[in-house]
Length: 161
Image (cartoon, rainbow, N blue to C red; front, side, top):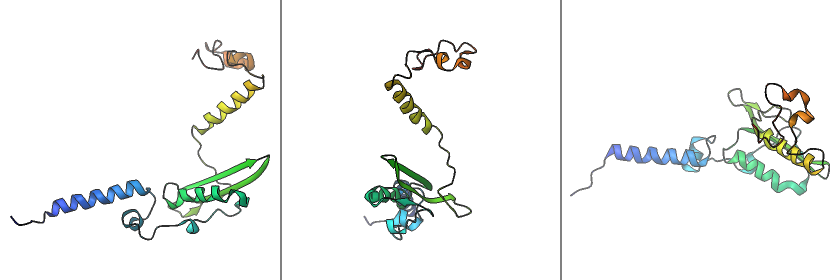
């Protein structure tokens, strides 16, 4: 019983390995980095957008931000942090257009999709905490035009939707 080389089996094994590496390493890394862990970007390779600023106390946060790009999990992004009413981190990195090789700048507009929902939740919770809003109150109480087309019973907590 000799060992026979099954080319189809080797091809399937190699293809599975390559796909596994690409999927688990981040979809935006070059081939040799994804598959062979060669020629991968490191944090020093990741350039921040022109005009980026940050307080040195937040260096670890900036490194974590750069990690998103070094691992191939991010194309272009911005991060701004305010601490005690002072902007301590205002950074960006990556590309706003990969095909045209355009850099992501601090004034690049990004699609936020549903991320504003969490911000609305915090604002509403803050207003309730300050006594300016009540969950059980009808929205129409605060916004009279909202009550049209059978929406007059909907409360802030949304239990009548």
